[in-house]
Image (tube, rainbow, N blue to C red; front, side, top):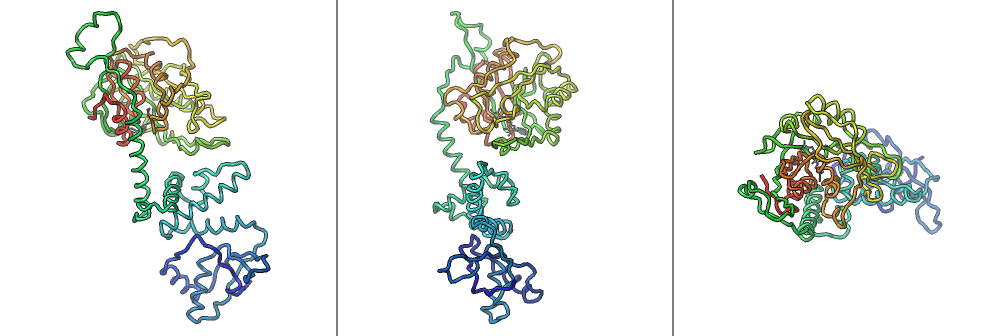
Length: 449
Ligand SMILES: C[S@@+](CC[C@H](N)C(=O)[O-])C[C@H]1O[C@@H](n2cnc3c(N)ncnc32)[C@H](O)[C@@H]1O
């Protein structure tokens, strides 16, 4: 139905700048082809209001009509509308936001603030239904990746708080990077502050390593420096490390983190099929590097058990068919243990051995507790870092002090640190420089190669 523009209240729009070019094109198209789509309005019930309708969606078309009238083209003083009176007020706003946010041509600040507004409105709606409006759901509704939602929201909050540095950023990416750098600086300051004292029980010089144990009977552990390097195992080897006794690691599977946070049934999006090449590269690397008496110990998700075993076997390892279960129990953190998801409430650990390898120690159980020491979890920003106590127990099953341990996916270095404290020579690499830098910063007795 046709309604006069003056009867419609435009209200507060999240979209302030519609872009001159865009409006010009739309005005031209309205003049030549006519209005193809009606705008959405709802009746105004307030008797005090001078308007009869309120604009819900179609702000750009409404503005183009207004401009045409200003140019003296009176035939545009009425606009084709779809009138809806059965939708609650918030839903109107949400519809408008969705429509605007799905356009690609908004100014980045306007866009960030729009996403925040939309997120807040939807969160209210979801919480009424006792549901959580996750970044994944938000991303799906706006047609953007969920990780982008998580980056835009803090930018929008900084804009709202008139953060001068973020306000002056030229692009969304610059603004995101400003906040990221701040988070990193804060985290690094915290790491330095919280770093536990390192007890170097003996200086790790080659001469000392050759000497027999000290005269008193107290067992001494040599704390060798951990060697870190940025290495992508698909294309490179750890510089200067040709062989190792064992590999002790946590194979990455491309888990979509947002899925690990939801209350309802968890649809895991493990990209194991896409990652099969990484597994191939991993086992080839193990084959080339691990000693004939060595072991590969790795955390994994139960659903990948058969794939891991098949690949291990085809690369000359014998996988143990009794995975060790690490029980996160009440100590599980929100990201790693959504309810009803056994693969996240527990983590499993696979041992695969070379034909000549023997087990160093039986731990007497196949279920180990996942226990964080007080404050330990806060030392890491990595989602997959492991507790030291658990890592040491696992390592002690196959490794002995003095042996060389390699973690090719070391993240922030929890496993190599356990290996170091166990008296091993530990090497850790990861393809993310940021993880390696943090690991190096946290472990005082470490070197970058
Ligand atoms: C499960 S996390 C390991 C966490 C680690 N245990 C810790 O203590 O923080 C797996 C790591 O593998 C790394 N990664 C993924 N693909 C890689 C590749 N092709 N080469 C090297 N590292 C990779 C990721 O950056 C991630 O930090």
